[in-house]
Image (cartoon, rainbow, N blue to C red; front, side, top):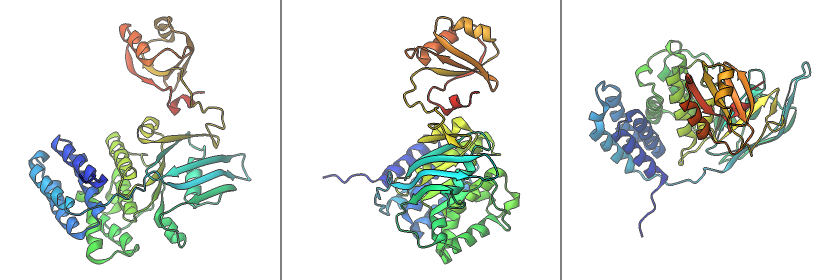
Length: 389
């Protein structure tokens, strides 16, 4: 009987496929994840030799394919068994509330169940309780009522152990002194890893988060995007089980946002070491791309308590950015049963009464008209429909 392929082997196959097809950056990062899963110093040494070649090769990375395969073969030589932790409940919050005596603001009640491998997005305008919820879940501030419980692989022994397994990364991170590499080595020493393994693990994490060429720089010399990469590298050295991030995309350019989001998804969905993750962001559509569920907060209340949660939402709602007038839109869409047209945030939000109308039908009609369209998007299932006043 043929042996069942492991999740690690599937990951390695993905790395080879992406690199061969020319997506060298993604294939490279997956290779590093596969190497880290082995937790083998000899694999780390061989992988770092490839890293040095890869990072210093300014020409076409496809020239490194044979070296890439050689590194892959070394990683494959170490068996990494499936752990099957993905999908297990790790955090439960029941009827969480936070009341502030001096103000009228109250967060909650909020109920949440987070499983290993889950990514939850947290959205809402500033001042609506996103940071408060994250810090409650991180055990950094006290809740007024409700229950928060964790189900780690091993019970926590003290607060320090809890904050190793559950990591909160604020929007404004602490200032660090000294070089990137020295700070990461120091952080790992605090978690009991010294000597050669400290050196190897830190270099592996530096490579994994794109800091190879910046490892000798001081923290103050890094851009916002690389400071976030540094925080992620420092966090992952601790091997957390839950990661809570407050606005990790703030102040990042579009490319940096995409890379960070891609990395967060890869880390959370790892079948070898899955992580439960919640992150807040103003980048609504980017959040929705990678999230299993999106929590929307307004005035401290989630959408279901605001009467906004519509799981059975079947009616079409579109977002349209056009130079044409409202009258032009009404004329083009006159054959449809339009319920409402709102101008919101510089774009039109159009709701249709008839739940049989499809996005493709509307798109075809608009395409045949003489419209100047910047973009059109189906937001029927998006939390964007809640950001309309």
